[in-house]
Amino acid sequence: MPVITDQQRKFYETTLQVTKQEISDLKDQIEEELAKVKDRIAELQNAINASKQMYAAACSRLGINNDMDDDEAGES
Image (tube, rainbow, N blue to C red; front, side, top):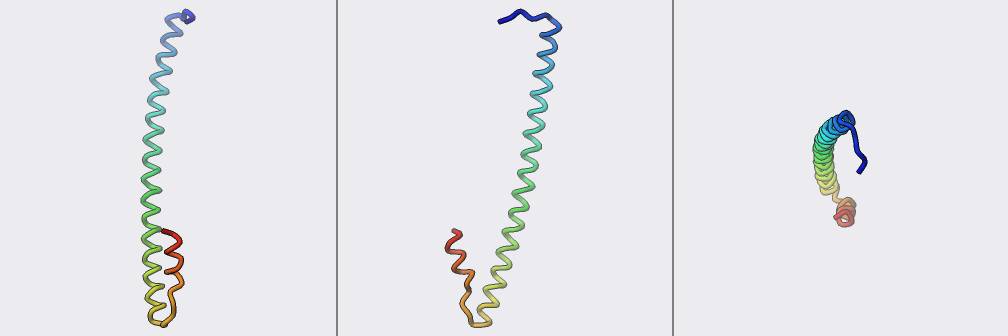
């Protein structure tokens, strides 16, 4: 291992501390964004389910086959 000066050692030690904190902060940001995405996906899934219920009710009232039931079997 090459010999480094005290000034170089201090520089690299500071670099380690700063970059370690940056990595930690970035990981925290990723977790925050991931939580937002998961919440949005849940909202969209709830909207799909509500629409499917309305669609099924309309099919029932019209006395026609619910073609969305066929789609659900393929999605599972």
